[in-house]
Length: 148
Image (cartoon, rainbow, N blue to C red; front, side, top):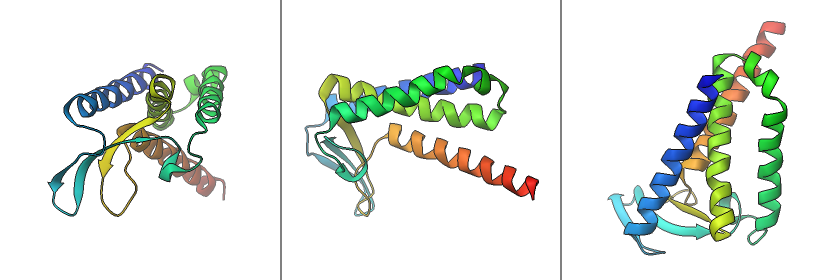
């Protein structure tokens, strides 16, 4: 269980620190090539979800994120009994969700900066959420294969 909490806190801290650096060292809209035409640091403030979907629906995202985090609190017993992969996965999801929730509460937008030029700009919280969900799906598929 401590693994879940540590992963969540580390994910949240890394996300908040990275956004702090971007917001204090760059101007909104600025783009710095790290690997020209492949990867840039591009500071934007996203008013929506992934790909800018549902722009301006801040309260909707706050409500959904709060419900997901509340479900984790209510499922605390289940999380304690889950294996290490689920602790990692849920810690990543919770830490990422908290990072973006803080942005929405403070700025009504999410701070994004990872720009691979072939994909919309995103942040470390988004990355953690995607990896966490991927680990959950991977574990679920492994369980399905065991049942067959």
